[in-house]
Image 1 (cartoon, rainbow, N blue to C red):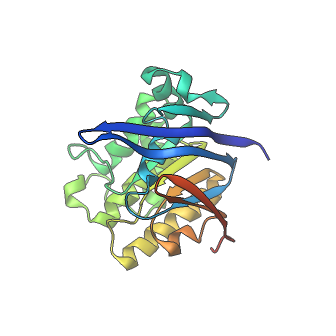
Image 2 (tube, helix red, strand yellow; image 1 turned 120 degrees about the horizontal axis):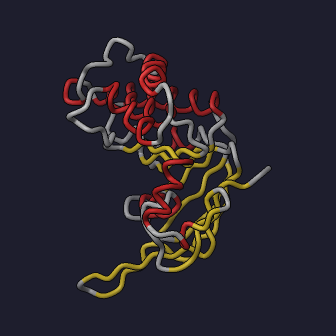
Length: 229
């Protein structure tokens, strides 16, 4: 199976008042197209930093990230933004919706920015698929946390990404709502055959992925798990 994502000797060090702090050290991993991968670890282990590097939101101190055969480390911010716009979708713990736009407009925005035809209809279709057909004109502050995350999921999948990065997608939700959002995320992911890289501290969510990698103090530990749908 073809590889869509690779990290090679990836490290991230930041300078603090107390001196240099190594957040990630010599990370090596690869993800195949269509695979679902959970990256787990305790708070402060470097999970979100790793996701940011893999998605091209940040640059490493050393090492490489190859996304769909493009070396993100060799690109400037404009180049990385192009790769993200063409190939990547995101679902964040904090939803990252624009409060001044309606649910429909939030989903339409990345479609319009990428020049895709039929943005309104596509956005309406995906909002209907996540159960929000009656909430198109509501603004994020008028929606519950679970509804906002549904909008974020619709926005991510409407762009037909090759790879989806999800950072603690149920972290701000109660258990029942989190289960619903998890079902929706994995259901749409299977339907679209999208590659999924999931950051989570929740075992129940991680166990739904085909494979797990664990971070501890910025270093990678590997464990396998069978996907549980």
